[in-house]
Image 1 (tube, rainbow, N blue to C red):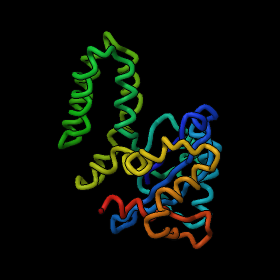
Image 2: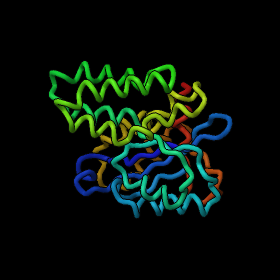
Image 3: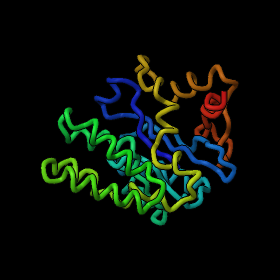
Length: 229
């Protein structure tokens, strides 16, 4: 499953309020929204409530969770679904590592990071990982620590079938769906209402979650239809 906290504009970000989003994928490879809940991205309690609701509605232990390491989601996951593997999002991690480097160094460092997660085997990824640390740690320890601390979680995707690597090493399914909605100027309505109306209002309605037909469980149907169109 993919997770992220998505802000609906500057005002919401300043108030630390966002939509806590969870997308799951079934055995046929179909992605479905499992949760869109108001909350605080860095709050363990906010994410705990989301995960407990999903568990109460019958969600089994996910094989893998993908997301940004800065979220309170991970502590909540270890409480509610301790057996779920963790994958840190390479998109977020790349931005965080580059922020610890001067701009003049960033292009080469970015390419070196790409050589890690684009490696054809885990062994090659490990070698590229070590090379990055040896290259940048002496002069830029902050960037090296940012990368090294999540080493295992960054490479977890290699333990899954290769055809899935591209989709499970980042939280892109959420980013691509909410990219334009996140900059909405309509700050007076809940983010979930904006998502439902704007993402689905002109796309033929919604899909209901596998947990029942409670309106709070409605899934954004147009996410998959927009990707396939």
